[in-house]
Image 1: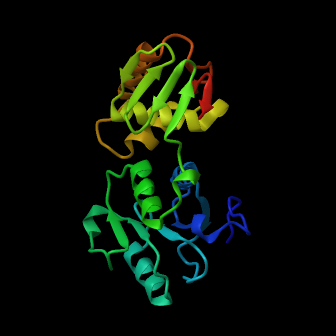
Image 2 (image 1 turned 180 degrees about the horizontal axis):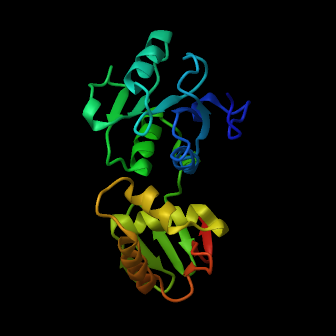
Length: 229
């Protein structure tokens, strides 16, 4: 089956196939891929494997009654040699088939896992998330993990604060719910609650100043004044 996110004439270097049986997790994986500059094409587990033009394959068997490792093996037998990311249950942990395959078990941080996959694919940096961008009077230095003010001041960022700013910047005016942010930034990690997000938002608001990190009446978080350099 073809997912609505598929673009027929997209470059094969940006097309990632997602073998997915759990519809609840599909939007999260697809969103992470799109934010890394990729186009996600989803298929059901019973779709026949193919070595046709895709850059990588993601097999999500965490919440599904399917043998993800066997699906990966079938893809290799079909002749697909690109990167494969298998998300699997810990109780059925198996070794990767080769050095082009990664096997991850919960807790899984989807943004980090997808970023690793994109690096394995070798997607050009220019099509991925920006190294620097602006939020109001601040320039966000991703590599230096800091905020740099137009007036000369600086604010150091923790890794999670930086990831939150990146996700909110990429969502633009649409905003993101607390659940989306917790899932995309913290993944399946146990002990992470809405209080975790609230604490990080509080600290970011103190660093950014008033009126830049907003939460509307619908509970959506968004940034004001975002501009890419």
